[in-house]
Figure: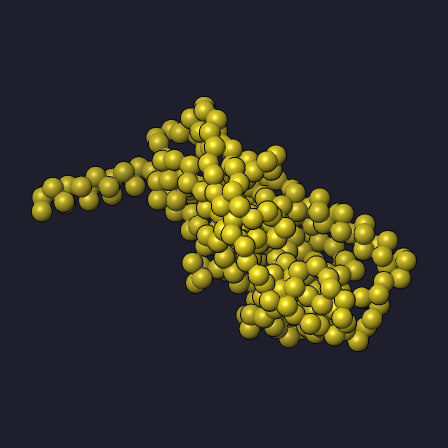
Length: 284
């Protein structure tokens, strides 16, 4: 019994020291691991040592978020919906050495969703609307690749609106009988004018009005983690603003391509659209 108590004391002291050295990295509240397209791979990189520098990691040429949890370094890898099934190689640098880790991606078949829009102009685009949508899609792709180094990325998200979760991530959508891109977010069924809150602390990356997404706010949480809030009726923030977790960003609406008032909430991780439900603490 004394040896057990001594061991517990040593562990407590070690964790206390770790909290002092890495105040925001000790317990990162990692998202749920799901090695499927649109999911997240949690890849262990090694133990956190005193005065050690945070490792760097890459999937191909794409930088990957690295954080610490319970005295271990982890790479938190966003898996695109179009990622190849099978083995993948993660390259990382730790303690001055370059190493690799392998992880596998399993297949997942997402259900189909058929949607009927009365406004057919959102499905069969005019030449001017198609040109606008193409420009916006290019700009959004650039925003999704944004990287800001930050030691304080909060991975324990809150749901940004009080409402019923609907329109699950990954649904293979068919608008008016025509196949379209998968649903790369999570819908929250709320009435127009419902307050929309930041899922975690961060900086406002962009505020804009898009053909498909309507009025949209991008929040940069650091290290390649970005959230999107779409179809808003009103925005209360501006590009460059710093926001805290739970701070009001705007009000919900029905702008863009939407069948009714709701919030479309997306999460981008190292450029990949991933399932927001994996970041909600109650789902871990």
